[in-house]
Image (cartoon, rainbow, N blue to C red; front, side, top):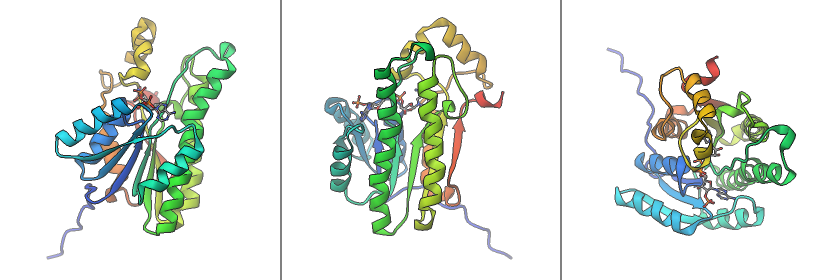
Length: 255
Ligand code: NAP
């Protein structure tokens, strides 16, 4: 009798993961997910107090996590912090902000703030982590929490969608550059989830109806809906997947 092919592991035991924007919302969920899959997680953000709460929640359920104060808009801070962490096997670029407005009303300072965190931040954190992965020579995984808005446009979202489309382009080019080092680069693209980032959107009846009308599964997404996608792409089960995106959008982009 032939032996069955074996499913590669979805576990991350022994891996070291860095998650940016891990103090709340989707980043906190990503950190919890990676920890529950066995990884040690460096949880990075600016607010020390919120990070400490997140770390103790992860530790409280037996996970291994550490708080890292990091501002992704500061490339010098990124280089120092990443150098101090030691080997990183998995990066999740999650830190993100939104300042929505009609394009005709967008202020330069809002444009710059969104680009600084969502694109420039993810770019230079990826660069710093990739340099370490390349010199270590053991491969790695770089994921970015992009968005369905990396694939379609949205109401009042010209700047936000521009940064998320840019992350998709960065991901494809990085996958080409880093493939030879065994580094896989992908995005996870969630639909709307209730977090501090989307509070104003869900509070706006018209926008809440817009969201509900797009959800083919008859409900709005929850943080848990993103967690499995992140663990899968970080794991050996996704060993042949690079340069692409996994949409967690409840069918939004299907039409
Ligand atoms: P959130 O609740 O507002 O959390 C944002 C996180 O980013 C916080 O931990 C925040 O911590 C951190 N952050 C912001 N600026 C930072 C900086 N300069 N340096 C380091 N960390 C920074 O947002 P979220 O909804 O969880 O969104 C997380 C990611 O998912 C974003 O990239 C967002 O675009 C994406 N996304 C969200 C949704 C959604 O519906 N919620 C849908 C699709 C994609 P500090 O303020 O302490 O730094």
